[in-house]
Amino acid sequence: SFSHCLFFCVALLLGCPAIHPRCRWGAAPYQGRPTPLQLPLGFLYVHHTYVPAPPCTDFARCAANMRSMQRYHQDTRGWEDIGYSFVVGSDGYVYEGRGWHWVGAHTLGHNSRGFGVAIVGNYTAALPTEAALRTVRDTLPTCAVRAGFLRPDYALLGHRQLVRTDCPGDALFHLLRTWPHFTAVSLRSLPYHGPPPLSLHKCHKVPVPCL
Image 1 (cartoon, rainbow, N blue to C red):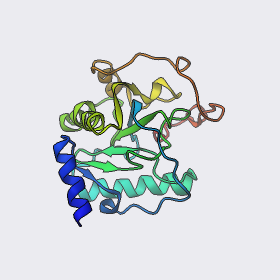
Image 2: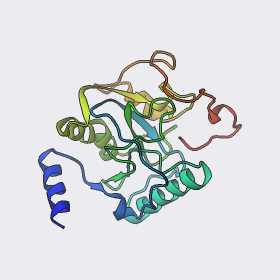
Image 3: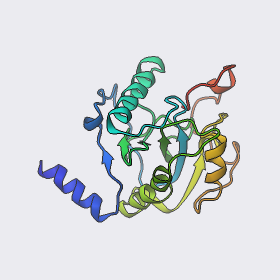
Image 4: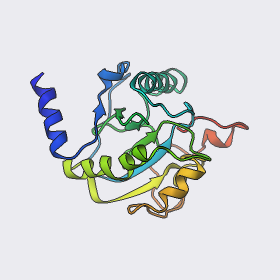
């Protein structure tokens, strides 16, 4: 349609990565009424999915992973939608979760202040592909800044800095600390905007998905 063509033309002009919209990966409908974000935001939160653990390297597998995560978030966790704003695959694409305009469910107590971007895979001991890293480090945030969704002085944080979790994995987090927008903060250094921070990550004896 004309609107889709216009969107992709504008995305190309802004230097945006290739983003598969929800309809492309087969998203189920949003359950409830989404809450709009107050743009531009000041934070980018980086996650790994942990489960699925293997990186997805083609569209069919990445799309299936998106549907699986959405089912888990909606049916098991009871959330309105997949929690992440965007998910990055190792196939060279970004997958739209809640997108640029709606509050996600990715970083407890801080969802309204930043975008949650997850890379498919478990990065406790290994790193994502260079293409996936470049998308999260450079291409996606540059696109967001140019579009007015993200402030130019945004802070990049690993999920573990704000929630009691191992996410985004030791290997990936150590790399994040070398990135230009990385900001060293502790759990208590930023205002908390959510329910009492009793994290399920503390209650499980085995690893749980990065939420």
